[in-house]
Each structure stands twice: as C-alpha cells, then as structure tokens.
Image (cartoon, rainbow, N blue to C red):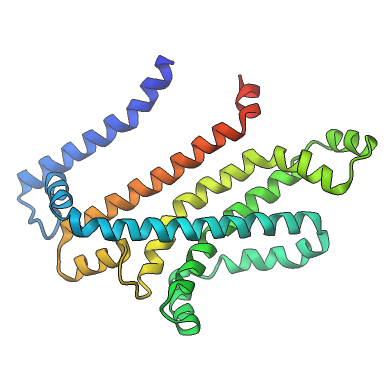
Length: 253
C-alpha cells in the first residue's frame, strides 16, 4: 500500500517542481506576461475570472460528455456488427481506417457547410474522434476470447447470442475499457475543436477570444482546464473499470 502511495505522489512532485522552475525562470528572466505568464499569474487570473469562465467550462463538459456517450455507443455497436458479421467486417473495416486519416480540423468546416452552426456538427466531430478507439479495442477484445471456452459453451448448447453476451463480451471488457480511456481524453479535445465551428460558449470560444486579445494568461487557464477535464474523465473510466471488471483485478493478484 505504501509503495502504491509513493508512486502516486511522484507525478505530483514532478509537476510541482516543473511549476516552481517555470515561476523562477519567468520572474528572473523578466518575461512579459503577454508572452509567457508565470503559474502564479495564471492561477490568479483563473480565480479572478471564474464567474465568466465557469460558463464556458460547463458548456464544454456538457458537449464533451454528450459526444463521448454517443461516440462510444456507436463504437460498441460498430464493433459488435463487424465481429458478428465477417462479410461486413471485411468490407467496412478498411474504410473505417481510411476515415481516420482525414484530419478533423479539415473536416470541421465542411460539417458547418452541410449541417449549419447548431449542435449537430459539433456532436459529429466528437463522435468521429471517440468512436474509432472503442471500435478497434472492442473488436480486438472479442477476438481474444479463448477458443476452448467457446468450444465448451457450444458443446453445452449455447446459441450464438448467448456465446456473445455471456462469454465474448465479458472477456472483451478489459480491451473495451482501454478504448474508453483513450476516447475519454479525446472527447474534451474534440469538444474544444468543435467549439471553433461557431459556438457561443465553451473553452474553445474562451481560448479564441483570449488569443485575439493577447491574454496569454487566460489561454493557459483554458489549457489547464482542458488537461484537468481530460484527467477527470480518464479517472472516472478507471473507477468504473475497477467496479465492473473485478475478476481481472483478482486474477492479477
């Protein structure tokens, strides 16, 4: 237990040391705040502008959560269809890989032209970012089910549906959660990118306004908020994984 606690503190110590060096360098070198603010200035600005900043923060959380849930739902359904229907997998899977080679930042303006400035293009952007890691991870997880266990269940008279729901899906959960962790961090990034499409609120809007006004301290406030939200989403997925995949942790012991 003490060893785990020590490992958990190491990243925090490194982070504090990084901010301390950053603070000293900025103060000693006399770097202007508009070019690179000190961490203390960023914290002060975050506290001072919280009343206006919080609305943008909660808007991004709402948008990112909605897109994440839709994206992972589509990703899991896509993975199940590709796995259960080999013909579809052979026909569609290469196209899914090709679709990920199109930069989202390039596709975003086209979505505005096609669907306008409402919520739909923003949700599509986040969905495109989130669904692919879940699809690939789930598909790999389904394939890794032990052949012997499948054979035993078939001998016991299990149907194809029972084989999937009672064996293949539970055994794929560790892989699925690996994809969910990636998608959880990507969802915030996707939300910020989607907010550049013409949103009225959000961290993407806040960063754009701050950059145009040369308020570098506010840009860093938004950056730190994005990092915190990504870590928070990642932590929530880890917590859910520990609650649902108990057999894995027991087997690891």
